[in-house]
Picture 1 (cartoon, protein in one colour):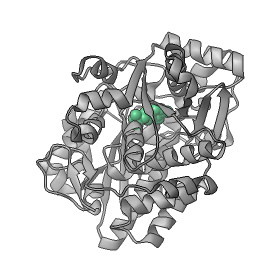
Picture 2: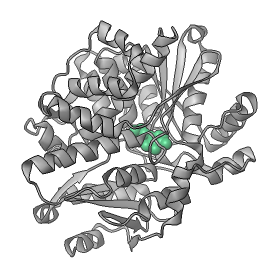
Picture 3: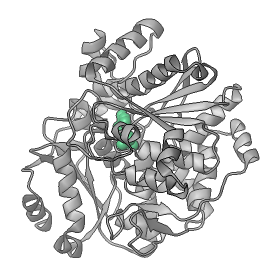
Length: 441
Ligand SMILES: *Cc1c(COP(=O)(O)O)cnc(C)c1O
């Protein structure tokens, strides 16, 4: 299968090239050229399959032309080594817990898959020393660093904004060492992202070494996220609740939602998606006005969604470009909501008090969007609402404890990270400083 760029000005690329390059030469995002529709009976069978088994089926549909089946199965089994249970909260509202992986956030799925696929290509081609650059507002760094830890021939550079990630998040990537270098940038997440983007465009750096991105612009990170949409559907199907399914996705860079749209495009019967945002809501503005305008990001309780210019917006518009009126088609398929920190906190308190369930600030946006839609439309009452809980609440222990007045247990998985020593290198937010540092390595 070939991959085209959303800007349509770069040549088609193989999967290997798309994964190793990350971003296309015309700065567009890679998209698979043609994907097989899953047959209804195959989707229907999934209710009798495990998360791993379903993921193997989808992985073969997505990547089977380029990677042999046994290798794909092995990569999937290494990646999906945890469960994603569905919890019934109340009425027709369900929660898909995507935080049972090693770093306790949904990004583990894409990061682990990408690490293993990249390692496979490097090994097969005898490529030496690929450098993975990743900008993070918290969760991407931990998932990517842990996904790639100890992999031969891959050096990971995590850039993160000083003082703007939670203590637990920082421990999850800054203490690892080995092939993981962490750079603490005196600036914001946008500054980190700008440095990474400038690096990809810098000729000298690209001549010096192979650079790729493990942000969700990389197809190997974003596409595997479609696995759990199929699994969620199958679990609801098993209990007879899969009709009229509406899925609410806490969104920042929109990789997760784009993967859901992809699953739908492959034939998964989802009636509608909801893009749930914090105050960084340029996508909601787009839904309201038909115009897309990026803004600088602002800090919120749900920091993994503090994104002012979501990269995967390009993928969403590209997916809908086959319609005569793409904007109208998007409005039919996706609705949007945005929440302030005050509403996020109030939602967390309400859900905890009424249902005894502890939401993290990201999941709270997803839940609230679903529940607001349910109150606004009579029709929503016959739909099944599913929101994705994208991180374990203990990753945001300080905020969650204060908001709920509790003392959350920190799972062993997270606690073990906190015993390591921080090994970050401090850099200013200018690109030249980073470049000097990188070239001197
Ligand atoms: C990354 C992240 C999001 C946003 O996902 P996108 O794919 O960037 O839209 C939401 N919640 C959590 C906890 C995250 O780590």
